[in-house]
Picture 1 (tube, rainbow, N blue to C red):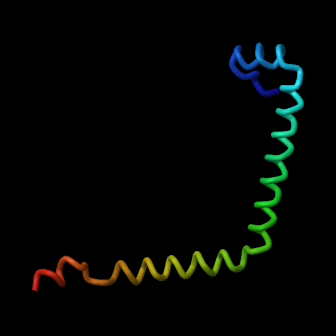
Picture 2 (cartoon, one colour; picture 1 turned 180 degrees about the horizontal axis):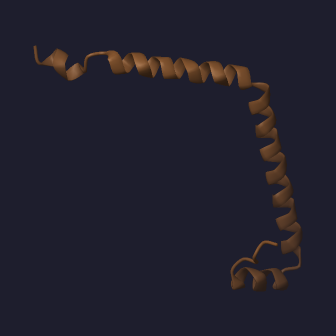
Length: 74
């Protein structure tokens, strides 16, 4: 079981009966948002993997280039 928030949050929740309902709505919204993002990642996993591989390849190639400083010194 999760520990309650700071004492002032418990007091505020007791004084505001709508606080619990708003908190539940926020929790539901956050759950839906996380599920939506997870679904997008799963649907686009192949494209994301290809993009990651391309980025790694570009970084590898960039690391092999001579630095710009050595070009300016000539």
